[in-house]
Length: 227
Ligand SMILES: *Cc1c(COP(=O)(O)O)cnc(C)c1O
Image (tube, rainbow, N blue to C red; front, top):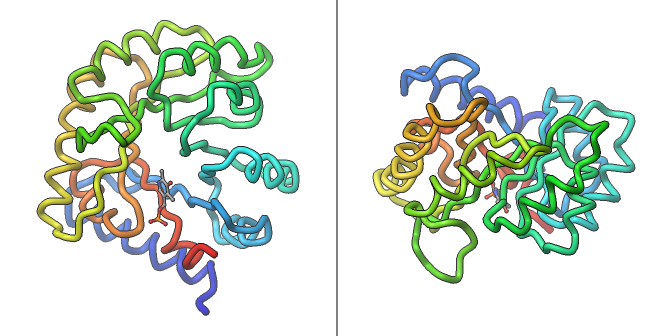
């Protein structure tokens, strides 16, 4: 089995090469390590290899790891489906939430974020495929939804996130990401601090970087297959 540190240095090299080949500024893309199902020890190894941003999908599992790793200077991102009765814990323990697609959830996160904490960073999740079964706001409704989120006092609207339908063809991967990137560029001038395009996973991050991703969410390629 490969070591986590080896995986990370390889991914960072590839990110760097893709930034170059797609005319992105050096350092434009942040690697978010998706640590769902991985033990705290694996996160320590990734930290030792230079990673500071970690993504979790399941609140209970994440809370235990956040507590166990409180000695490290980590930035925690919640990227999973949100239950509206669990927003208080999200507001308390995370720095970012990428999966906001309901106003009720956004309002609760704002109300429940402590005044002593920095505003909670928010990405609005967009559903690119238009399948009803998928989470996310439609592209057509994204602007008005963002306008409402931007008024909430304890949130900082940072950008857009999407999980496009799995697609192995590079050209079609790019087409999906390009649709989100177009909306991102259009909204960018409307909202102060709107600087994050969260797209790309282990199987499609080259296409995401080519289309302007600023943050890629990588699980398997960092930690190996999930157990
Ligand atoms: C699991 C997950 C990822 C990482 O997926 P990999 O294919 O393992 O890189 C990224 N984003 C979200 C929202 C996820 O749930």
